Image (tube, rainbow over all chains, first blue to last red; front, side):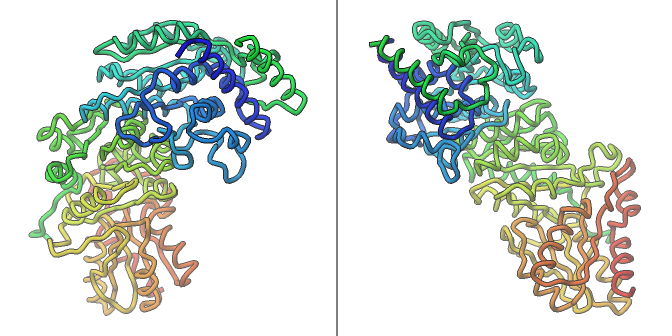
Amino acid sequence: MNNKELMKHANEVRKMIIIGTHSAKAGHPGGSLSAADIFTFLYFEEMNIDPQDPANPDRDRFVLSKGHTAPGLYGAMAERGYFSKDEIPTLRHTGARLQGHPSMQYLPGIDMSSGSLGQGISAACGMALGAKLQNKDFRVYTLLGDGELEEGQVWEAAMFAGAKKLDNLVVIVDNNNLQIDGPISEVNNPYPIDKKFEAFNFHVININGNDFDEIRAAMKEARATKGMPTCIVAKTLKGKGVSFMENQVAWHGVAPNDEQFEIAMKDLERIGEEIG
Amino acid sequence: MADVKKIATRQSYGESLRDLAEQYPNLVVLDADLSNATKTGTFKKAYPDRFINCGIAEANMMSIAAGLSTTGLIPFASTFAMFASGRAYEQVRNSIGYPHLNVKIGATHAGISVGEDGASHQCLEDLALMRMIPGMVVMCPADDTEARMAIKAALDYVGPVYIRFGRAAVPVVFDENYKFEIGKGAILREGTDVTIVANGLCVASALEAADKLAADGISAEVINICTIKPLDDDLIVASAKKTGKVVTAEEHSIIGGLGGAVAECLAEKCPTPMYRIGVRDRFGESGPAAELLHKYMLDGEGVYRQVKEFVTK
């Protein structure tokens, strides 16, 4: 898929993030928007998946370790055809399949329930090991927040992935530099991220996570890497695409009100027109 | 009791995993650097390719097991009860329980019979913690026979299961004719004056106590409840109606485990005078297992004395 098409899809994903969180009057738009390009690339180009056959045992897996950015995942899944976009406004509503954090019990196509930080990367390691034990060639992708790296379990999992040489595992860090209490370097500095994963025997690639050429090149490099897992440290812009949310820590876990919703949607409509 | 065969249920655990491996090709075993103590080393020796050592990282191990299960494997995650239910509680809840994944947890070294290691390793809260997780099956086998049957039943059951095993050798109570079913208790001895509901090593203590009580003219009914959840309410209620007095006996805190479960059941369905034998809201301590079981009144003598006092007061 060419970059223009990917950008169009990503912009639709961003609209759904705004529509969902506005409707829910809650949720996490900032980190959903920063990772929208990564979600889009995974679901439209990288992963071997079929929305009509979400439980296929040979499919590639995705674990959203930073589960609070479910609106971004739901947006990508709806855009890809797992379910109707009409369902997006049910986000976080009572009885909805679109739970506040992803639940495989509620929504087909969710490969792992997540939300409690640090656990998703471990589950992804289990999936990758499961593939190896059964001589299957599916790949496993997991997306972590940079703040999430403060959870000790992340490094238990990283040690395990390196030790077991899980080269079918790709760990992506959405490095938007902001967590709920402020810049990650001020809360409890996880930098340098790349050197830490290198020390745990990962092949590490630093990219701009809002650039499809760089995402594509990194994913290709990950596929070519044998004998060790890959970590893609994706530098991103929190709140990307919505003027007043960009790089603003306040938009980590707050939903837009009606007025803000109008501005956000106009921003995204304009970006859509610019893409053409 | 000198001629009674004694086997630690952790021994049964390791051997069962090895013995069932061929019949269950999807079975894989995880441990956290304790394979010698949990006895999963027995499995590892026979099936090294299906054994995964996670190192000293129990939280990671539980979420790894969850991931493995989504690929069609049946993981048995093993460590001491303290770390399985305590340290990794939230991983068990959120990675395994919430998505209701087909993960089995083999928790050894439960209770004060861990002995010399002392309170930090003597888990007395695991049954309570695991019982609170929706959809979790929780079992505490009494002996070698029941442990083996519970492990096989867990492999046949689809969903999360927690099984508790002990470090110390305990008397073999059941023979191979014993019929085991998840969620079903068993009347081991009929009686009319008092019901003793027991699990784990307290089953042997309860049977010994029932003999002593009989000599005093007290007829005790002894019920084995291996599956604390789902609890065999019908069996317990029927016995409570018959005897009018119920005592629980377990190597666990009197809060939240078997005693808690039976109290909840009877309070709603058949209010009955009750006494809970167990560790009375305190931590354990170092010492040889037999001495601790005696001190905390969980051996045959201790159960006898407590039941007698409850019945005759």
